[in-house]
Length: 312
Image (cartoon, rainbow, N blue to C red; front, side):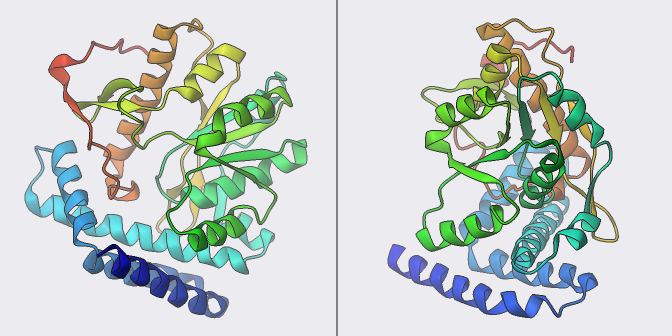
């Protein structure tokens, strides 16, 4: 079974490589159609992920109808297909054109936080187009002379790793694998640089902090919060919101952290603030989040969770 899955992945990669040169000639308005196609292909080709997606939606939104769960699941796959198409377009898309398609609503926040001289933590999630968001952050910080290190998870297929790395580093971003992240983050912040991190997927349950997320207690990544409090580094939240015309806008906000102590409880509260903000965002537009991930593979009833402060 694994052998056939591996062959299938390589076949799909071959198709994608053949498609990349053709995207240059595809009008932007048809990217959504291509996204729908790739999303449907994934939908029908991977029954396990499809089942996981619907189960996740049922868990997160138990009061919604079954038809709503399936509708959002299909739209989630369309979003993933659009993200894939847009990532492929980085092979030819010029910087000027790219900057028109994703814009920060308040980019001055980068300079305001950087002026504190402690580096920057850029925190987001697998929401909207997170790959474009990382590229755009690198471009936005370049005039300030601030390099961006992006923490990434190694993919199973080396060919996919090389393929993604090519697109992710096109405009100067550096990549560090998750396993090497702790020291890389500390070194980058010591140089007063920026580190980008997606903290929404599950952490190792045996060593993680467990916090509420969509009605259950789940293991979460606390390293961004721990670093922010230890070194007093500002955290900037940003999520790429797709607009009706296909463009993205990114409102930036600083995640309040300076009122918290550098303690276990401080780390817990800061991580909880991120999760509350993320949950509210996903609730508004659930189709933009990557529900295919087995986020609740390890979970506990909220009955066993320690209550969290509600202040933000």
